[in-house]
Figure 1 (cartoon, one colour):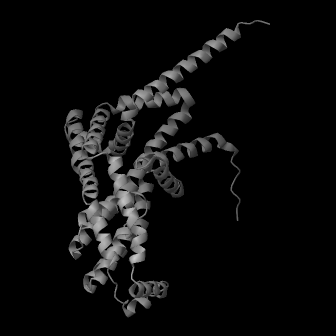
Figure 2 (cartoon, one colour):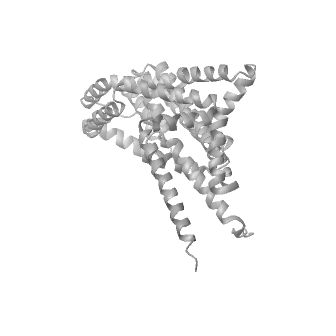
Figure 3 (cartoon, one colour):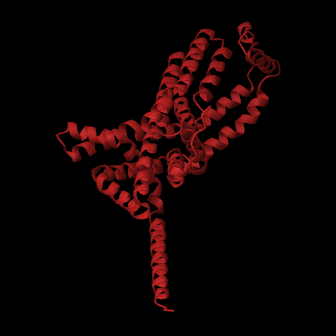
Amino acid sequence: MSNTPRPELIRNLLAIVSVALMMAASLWVLRPFLGPLIWATMVVVATWPMMRGLQARLWGRRGLATAVMVLALLLVLFVPLSIALGAMITHADSVVALANKLADSRLPEPPEWVGDLPLVGGSVAEIWHRVAVDGYGYVMALVKPYFGISFKWLAGQAGGLGMIGLQFLITVGIAGVLYSCGETAARGVRGFALRLAGAQGDQVITLAGQAIRGVALGIVVTAIVQSSLGGVALLIVGVPFAGLLAAVMFMACLAQIGPVLVLAPAVGWLYWSGDNTWGTVLLIFTVIITSLDNVLRPWLIKKGADLPLLLIFSGVIGGLLAFGLVGLFVGPVVLAVTYTMLIAWIGDDMPPEESH
């Protein structure tokens, strides 16, 4: 038997190990830029059709379109988010002081109409009565430490406003580079996928881009709409710290908790202050803004990516818990790619649907 295949096998193994080591070393060197690179990639993929449409209107000038998109990113997304994070860090002491003040306050007895609410009226009235009689200092005693811990953690993670601004500027800079040479980058990624898995690999890359656009449309746009409307409603009814609460509402909407986390306590605060008219107005706003989740988000996600909604939402929540804020995009993409690969692997072996 000939021994020629063995040196060839060893040579291939050494080549694979060398490439893997070089890739690992490259990722280690680029580690400080991986976060901004991932964010910039997600933003560029999500807004690429918008950039191409803008380029067509600017006489086909890619440089002008890139400059406009970078300026739009600074004005529409990153500057407001930086201001929101800065406001949350700056007003941390005020929020804790407000929690201390509320702990010593008393809630009036619930109005009669609260008990008449369908389904939940009796439970809400009972809980409200207990808080009115016993005070809700014990509730604030449980919640208050988490306010301080959360804001201190946020400040520690942010590392100061300078670091936030630096990270966002790096992200915008990388996004500008990707806008200017996006076709070359996309061709390289598709070429790697074709080399790795053939036509199925190319299909996976296409679906990953659709998943990113679907999540950007469904999650981010819905969060912006809900938090903006909620902030305007808080400002109209005269709730203090409306800008800060809108920023918290935006984060809660991104985390799939919803605006009710902020709006419901605000409604209770207005009733507790004796301003029943504005409390009712904000309650109506709360119902309308919260219900947007059931209409706007599914429509936008299906518009961006033809994937099961359960898959997208599982990826959003799981990615957020696993990878932080960037996991909102990474999670759905990972699940979408895995789902596509499994469907392609099963292929024609899928049993036919049973007729009922």
